Length: 262
Image 1 (tube, rainbow, N blue to C red):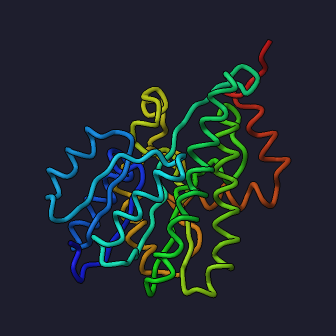
Image 2: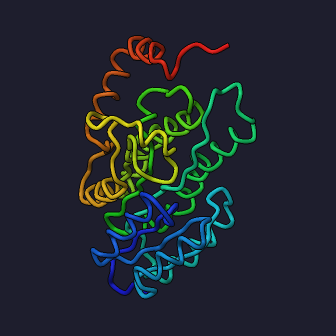
Image 3: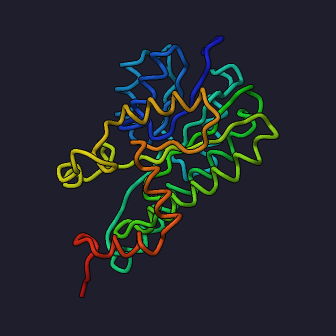
């Protein structure tokens, strides 16, 4: 049982940003609910954190009944409270839009967007019952301007960013805060090794450790800030894309990565 401890429910917790967030919050004395389709990774995490400090369970975020069951089991163990919902689970499938299998396109939408919608919808009763709670979601730097090569992924993250903004207004009436994080290149399993190796050493698209996002989740719980950028320079891209979308488009089109195709 969590006892008097605050609690966090994390999807995509078996690796990367979710795992680092679980480690950080457990170290701060929180009770952690860790969820993922990777059961082996979850068991390793439970061994590290201690079974008394966490609850693990396989969860398919696209399955509403499964998500509801996970929350129904988490609520009593966490003392009927949910201080922080971290919608972090996501998948990345890229390539030219017209050359991707349509099944891959739908899979990205299901996990990255529908999974978030399900999570928030099913968790809002617990969030409303917990004073000072936060609904926090992983968006992406690709939500600043649509990124070629990952167009559908980018579209889902734009949707998450817009959803965050709308719900931050709606849920204010319940005393529930809503925010998101827009990471750039983060060293996680979802990032292709080639992208990590070719990442610049400086600037907004330098590679960042997953722990940097975990630290932002912690800061967000103690703040009213809406959008969090990792690194902070990503905010510059957001402003540029808003103020000069055509110039941003043309600049991207000139880059060899997004050059002409047959």
